[in-house]
Amino acid sequence: MEKEPEILSSKLIHKGWLKLIVDKLKLHHIDKPYYYDVVKINNGVAVLPFLDMETLLLAEQYRHPAKKYFLEPIQGGIKKGESYEDAARRELLEDTDYVGDLHHLTSIYPLPAAIDMELNFFFVTNIKKIQEPQLDKFESLRIVEKDYSNVVEGVLSGEHKDGALQLLVRSFDADKISYWCDLFSHN
Image (cartoon, rainbow, N blue to C red; front, side, top):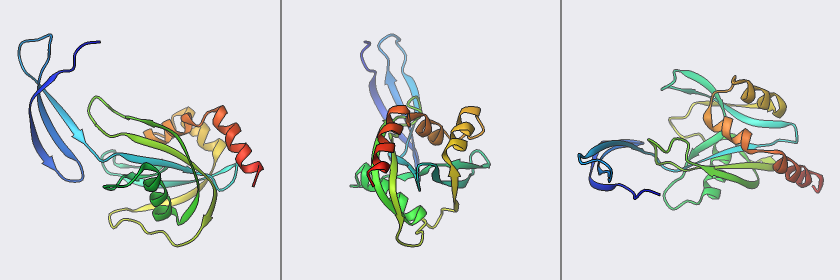
């Protein structure tokens, strides 16, 4: 494996809910410095909450960069000092008003060529409503119940374009479904 590039300098270009950094790199196979744009975003979580074996809670939310509404898993960023599990529980409660048994699936880097964010995937069983949603002041979403098999069809056909939903549903493979079915059969 090739040696990692040396970072000669790093310049903050923008700081908001994300940071844009330009790194000046010394690549070992070329003589001139190479400038690389990096987007820094807090790590995040994406959650598939199951009301029962057939029904999901998902969010419909407008995403300005794409200028359209998306069907998405419950998702959000991790706050400073918060674990992935605690962030998943918090996002589920804030966005849906539900709590339940959290199960970790996997983690990914959705676009490692440009973004440093790690996204952790969870599914939730045995959910129950305990309060009204507590959305962040800039959030505007609608929670909807969807049949799991229809969501899978929409993912496979390309109807559902949200990357987190695409990858999360695809991560929920046959082994996980068997495990999940065992969870429901014991409750």
